[in-house]
Length: 511
Image 1: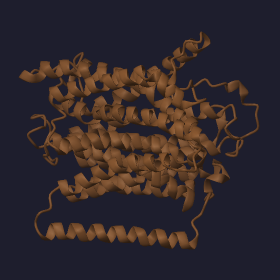
Image 2 (image 1 turned 90 degrees about the horizontal axis):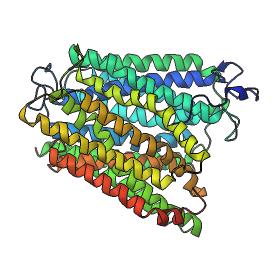
Image 3 (image 1 turned 90 degrees about the vertical axis):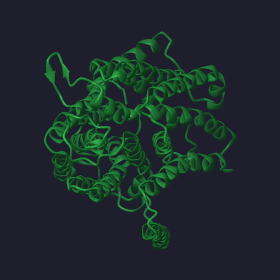
Image 4 (image 1 turned 45 degrees about the horizontal axis):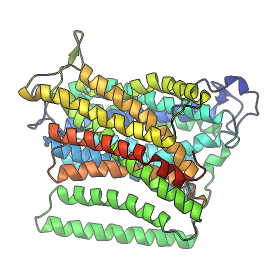
């Protein structure tokens, strides 16, 4: 993900990709369609995400006393739990999203359906009330899960196979669309939602998604014909069996919750805790199923044993990293000054800091890796993972300082959060691109397509751990817990570094 944007523009004399002859920065014209679709989808997603924890606590004891009311007046712990579950479900649903693209609708139709669902979700969020809020949250999570895997697949369809020299550069351009949307969203949606109306902000997110859908439909002729193909369509028997199983689970869940509501024992935790547990059980179950597959060769089994190290490390990393939108967001709203150099701004703007750092630092770090590689000194995959864990842990140990300073009611400088987000971004750039790469390299042949979904499950596991801790009464917004998480990540990074030779041995020929 951190590849250079200048990836050999001079090589564009190769044949036009299936997306058509028109060019977009030397790439197939269809990349512009997918770039803009992803940019607007990320604009809507990150805009809503920037408002989410602030809206949940607005009007309650955890909120900034000077902020507008009209929110759900929840505690910081409940807001953190809901935010974490939401993020976990987006990544968990990427697996069935890929399945729909492969077996039911094909990538192109799945993206159209998903963007419509996301837009409907944001419009539902724009309706005041707790019921519409949770319904909208479910719709956005489902739509995002459907879109996530399929739009990336369509980017790959634009090129002449894995050896096309433009392919890496195309994915880098596409990745920049993610960060442009993520950077702009809090500045626009966050400002409107936090300063004027929460529900108008959610409605603006729907407008952003609508723009993405319209331009996707207008530009769909530039996409590869493969994007409309269902690679492995369900047979009639499989379709009927899937519908029966789905309906059985749906009826069982509806009956169970009807009993809970009728007996008067239902609380929000009856919904949050089962979802959190499922989000932890599924990643573990998927890894166990793959690891115990007797059809895998001894080499593939060894690689899966090595991959589990990376999976656990990634789960610890994302557990802390994603608190940038919950724990750190709430701290920015309640304990940090809303001015810098005399300029005032809403706290939702902090969510623009990470994508800004990514756009600034990704080319720099990519150049550093190349510079070190030329001298045969580039860190190995295991060392980069250890670096990522250590940096995310260090960011929370730094976070302890402003938290202690603000304990007496003093509002700290915004530069504390800007600096912490910078440390986290460097950690992300050290771990995330390498994690994607090592996942494809270590995947058993039988599970080649599914392993990318397994990588996303590390995010699910990390976020569900955060949610479960919050629901269990652990104050993730407390100084001691933040310090403990920081130490835990640093210890995990040290363990990866200490056992790096063992992990390398399990990896076989992968480096």
